[in-house]
Image (cartoon, rainbow, N blue to C red; front, side):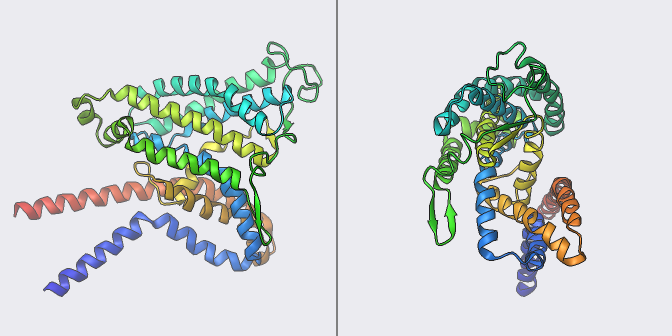
Length: 371
């Protein structure tokens, strides 16, 4: 009898672990299959993963605080990414280079990100329970305002003195803005080599500082309030917590972090694709976080790093694996698009299924307790 009970516990424990980590397990399995097919060296894969980790980790970390506050994945983080790009455009026009240019871009874009986050938070507070869909629609809506600003406002209403930034008609920003004076400014600040492997210590230090801030913030009164709001808004309100204000602060913080994350991302790339660099920031960051084992109600720092590594490992190896397997690299490119959108859908379905199973277990426990 005891053996049967132990066996039952073991099976349920393993089943729960698999259901909670189904997406990371799937990605690990596919990666183990694709890596040998790609025929990339270990050093090349490690360097590419390091580059993508420092490029994307700050953006993905910006999603954690709204999840703590029970608002799900903040797809409206693209508003912060837009603010960061506007700051970079201004700084490029003023010809401020290197780390001072990055710092000035952050200073210029912070007020824009705060205003965007405030307006976004106000709208999301009116859409309780539907924050993710509302945030996604807000991203599309704000895209129109952003395009109006950079395509017609800059150079016509807002003075832009650098002719290399402006379209030939005299107003509107060009499709690509070269950040050559700022490219890898943070990555190269404290970089060092171990053999042939380059470690961008400057960017890693900034990411580590954000991780420390998130850990510290979760222990503050405001962080505990956000956790309480995320668990149950009615109970939090009854305990005297200002639920709406707490949720609003969570979105503002997330938007400002996304603003800084986009600046770090673009200094790594070295070029701003003016009209769509920000478009995929929300979807790619959310997909990476979900691949790391997070859900729309639970996420931590380890999910960020595991997710970025697994998600981008797939991006690196899939084109070459497709080419070597069937002779067409385009299969890998199609697979990338499928993975980006598919992982979000699959993760949300698995999360909903796990929630139903958890509720069913709770009902069975109560029924057993009553008996």
